[in-house]
Image 1 (cartoon, one colour):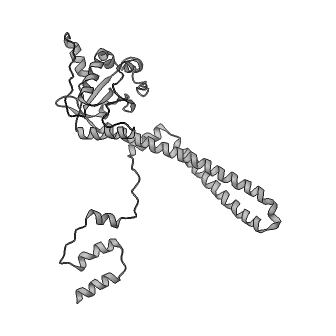
Image 2 (image 1 turned 90 degrees about the vertical axis):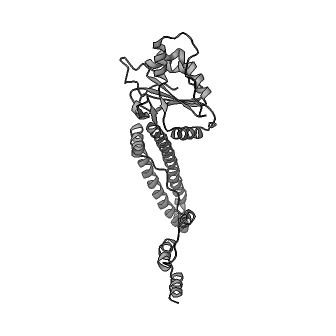
Image 3 (image 1 turned 120 degrees about the vertical axis):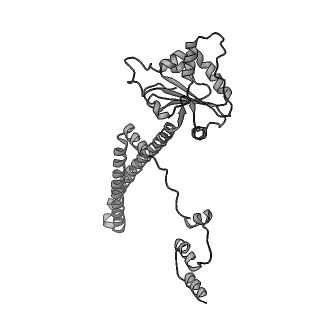
Length: 308
């Protein structure tokens, strides 16, 4: 009887779903309850998914790249608030003028003021929305670049370092596709090996079909120096390939590229993405556009590496 009374009091007492979850084990101590994922989702129904979170590093880089955007957005909001307040005051004046025949002559002037106020609000709201969209797009791009910088590369049997370790040292060119695509890209790069190395280019081949590409030249007569240069150009290999595959698939999805399409992606000396494309990388364009890593211009042109 006591158990019935306690259960009845629980049913009668108005409680929230969260309180019910906490009280049920106390009312029935002889039974165990498991909270399934579905029950948790039901109790949280109505809660909107949180907006995407960006790292503090991405936000700082965004402010550096667009230093006046936050100032513009602040003034846009101030102008929107000012115009909205002026429009509301004008509406109260319009209502008063319409209800008073003596002030009927003021109606056209009041309507003109309302039009100006809400026109200004619309313009500044559009400008704010445009800057906000550009900011979110930039933060998303910087977040993707930050994720890329944390991916690991194998330099040799003993060294595994992140992509970010090559900032200021090398310009990485990432190739992602089947083994046949990697092998053909290697053959196409052979005539440009010296020029690519002079410009700090290092290739990251990622075979997405699980097969090993053939990274040996078809030329029979080669000296040891040429072989060493080719190995140095193609010495890097991705580690934790599932993370690499996830990142590359995300880039393809955002660019509306087929998942099976072979792609290349080139980075600037400072680690930012310079360009990308479907198919074989334009090795000759790299040599024409990229400055050498040695000389009077080294370091000054790290962020201006061309378009490819």
